[in-house]
Amino acid sequence: MGILVLKSRKLSGILDTTANRVTLGGRTFSLSPQAVLSPGDTVKLQGEEFLVLSPSPHMFRDYAKRSAQIIQPWDAASIIFHCSIKEGSRVLESGAGSGALTMALISAVGKSGLVTTVETDKKNIDLTRQNLDLVVPGHSWNAVNGNISTIDLEGRYDAVILDIPEPWNSIVNVRRFHIPGGRLCCYSPTYNQLEKNVSALTEAGYYVEESFELIKRDILVRSGATRPDNDIIGHTAFLTFAVKLSGLTIKG
Image (cartoon, rainbow, N blue to C red; front, side, top):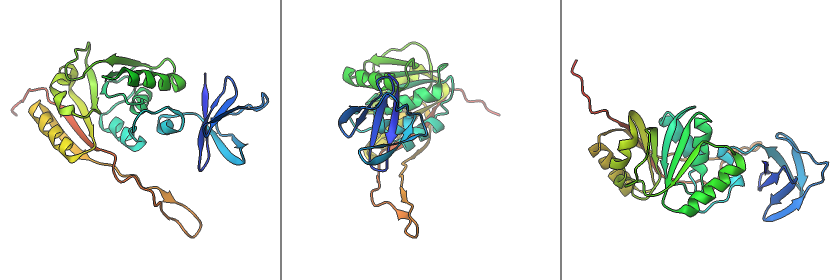
């Protein structure tokens, strides 16, 4: 099954290109066999005009099934950038959720890289796999059902991302699989978690680079009345980025 995303100002839906079937606003209906849609086209359905788009990670919430709050696109983009994740990177992620960040990571590492996700809840693994198969079949993803604080993994990773309630309990263990100079990100919603993360990273032999939050403010652009949107997501989570130290100090 291949899909395209249908997006209007108010509503999003998906088009199953194999069956030519649209799911929109909780309803599913078939299009005419002659209605062959491609990215960039527009189509009028139920009295509203939709833009046809190829699915991408930043549009995850428009086409995927979700079990919980997802990592927002601006946070995911910052994680990828600050962790130097690129084509061929090996990334270790803990906490699958519905797969929003996982999909972004897979897109970044490409077919020559690998994303390994450790998740305690098998239902989250199944949901993430379902969402990935919908958009990126043949993906470079390795799912492991287990606890990141105690698990033993093969190989070493360029970047580590912890999106779990108590990441500080896992840092000592994941350090074993992390290359020297590799970057680690903790994604946590509260100040208390942020403080514990920084303390644990420092004690475990990481150099903490920075901690911050990102707030996205949409702008309503209208002739003579352009202004910020009233609906603003005031906080998602705090991001902490750190580098694994090799333990070697050279005196000049």
